[in-house]
Image 1 (tube, rainbow over the protein chains, first blue to last red):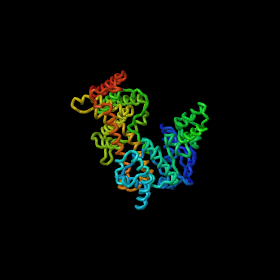
Image 2: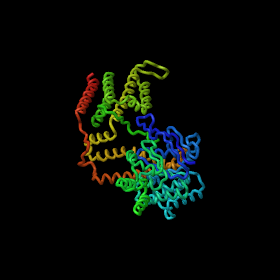
Image 3: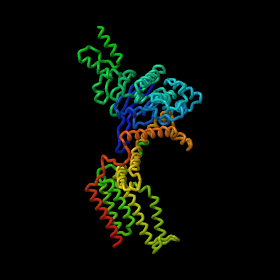
Length: 282
Length: 266
């Protein structure tokens, strides 16, 4: 069923001097099992939009349907919605608070009022998913490295067994190794658990490599909603709104301009390699 | 939700009073407060009213903002006015049982009420036209002489401005952590007092950690730029008196002279 957003508007500080139209008439649908990338310049409304999807912010007008039910209807259980739609904030390691890794991951399932056994088995499962073994369980989250802390924080959300996982720039401030590890784990969740993923990112390379579909936001409006190939074809328009296409797209376009009959519909390095080899073998 | 908190009450417009040096405004507020205690005569009150009204007009801040500050002292105002009204001995003009109101009582309580209201409005003019940072700057410079008796004026002023600077940052941080924990099912609203206090732990621990992290980062950044206290330190925007400050000081002196004249000469 997934998530459906209809005519969603959000006006910040309505009626004051600071009034700002943060989201303008957003329509979108995210189906079960999709891997969606969300991109946009700083202040374009990405973070505001994702906070609507689990009910942390209430839209000024419009509706959001989760599995067919309007979440703004009176009596809708927001607490339950938040465990179905897991949201991992930017720099999630800043929200760790418990004395050891295991208890911190237990915080989410504990709030779901599950039995002790269930809480522990879910937390174990979540920590395994992010690749942290038992030797970490009793360590203080504050003694871990940046990448490990972040994985603990992501496990904290995964332990609630969400159907949809939203990640706001999960790789910001990580080194290339930590970044690849986190993204590969997210991809595995998508492939193996069939989890719906919404990934907010500033890295066009990451987006091009992992997602099936891209949403582009600009000044609170949705400007593109298509496959990576289609969206990155508009790389000139993307630049105008402060974004860019993956670097490899620029390379193939330059090659094309130099008269090489290369397919410009390329967004990842692997595709470019195959295409160049194909051209060379001709 | 938490973003609605506003700090201080600075009202950003570009008026004559906004452009004055903060030291001038500090001095002026002090003069005005002292004058209110010197005044005991209807003519002097008229002078004070004129002075205050022209200050309000010069500040270009809507009157509503000034009066808003009075809400905090309504209770105090009522108590002091009624005590003076009923308990001042003198010529009775109204009597009901043991309650009597005297002519002197009416006069004293009216003066008292006006005095308190002027006090609050007068000091809000200063805070409405001066940013907290300008205020600390002004205080630092005016109290510089205390350095001679080994009061670390610069350090205290620096701490004040850092604290002020950090409040909005911490408010934003609180909002962020709160939402992140709510996304994990935390509940900050229901439960009894003890339960509520316990529920705050997931908010307070990360908040403290982040405050300490920011503090060490800031200390490091200051040291990296060779900060070593106020001694020999110059400012990018030093406070400098302009012509309008001179004029304002003159007005203050004339005002004080007029009020004192009414009181002591008659």
